Length: 325
Image 1: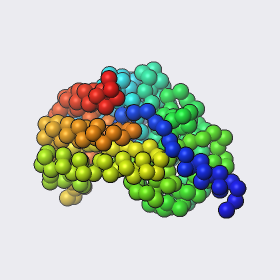
Image 2: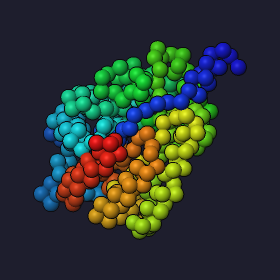
Image 3: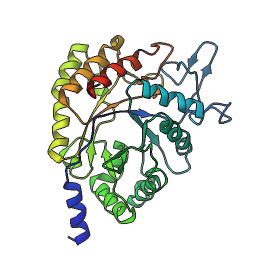
């Protein structure tokens, strides 16, 4: 083992201390003809009937554009009013439509005292060096901005399970070592895999979407599942000395875009409520919400024609309790 590798392992073994946060997965991939000159990610839009063929529900703000500074400002304002500390923004590469949305998102977050990081979705060509280049770009381009999510002064990035699977855990160990060689400051990567092996490599662990575990369950069954599961998630992280996360969903329905798809009933907010209650009992560092605005999969808490602002109100209540407000 080289001296540098020893230092990397020693660095990873240090317990990470993080204050309680509530973060929502956020999608910046929407475009409309008024702002971007074309529809992006919205399809089959009928604004008179308030229907979108590719969206389970209809946004109160209509089929918006993620590059619109007014839209980003409204989202950050709602987040601030409802105890959501920040957004984990889906990111698909330098120069991508999602990358171009980062500037107005960060500016809005700074105005409203919110935090921003990215969800690193995919590794180009399944190559370690491509992941290193991508993350180095993100850290150098955005990591020192005041609105960027940091722990102990170190910028945080979330890594999606697909990206983990593309190069494996050992590939991610190599990514982290190479990033430390090339990036002047420290950083934390939060991996989408809850296991001791992942906790030995990443500085935090999480899961993106537990919808499969909740499919066809009643509210009481979801409560029992959450009670049995959440404490285990937190224990894996605590045993590894890394940031612990519990992910909750208001519901889920991707049957408009996938066949047969998955549907998890919302039960008029009861599904969301019992997850929050059991999450608080498990005492994680962070609660993650899937999602702020994944309209295609029907997991959004953003106000909709169907539910109004019910889920923002529920979030304000439970996120406030979680953070002791």
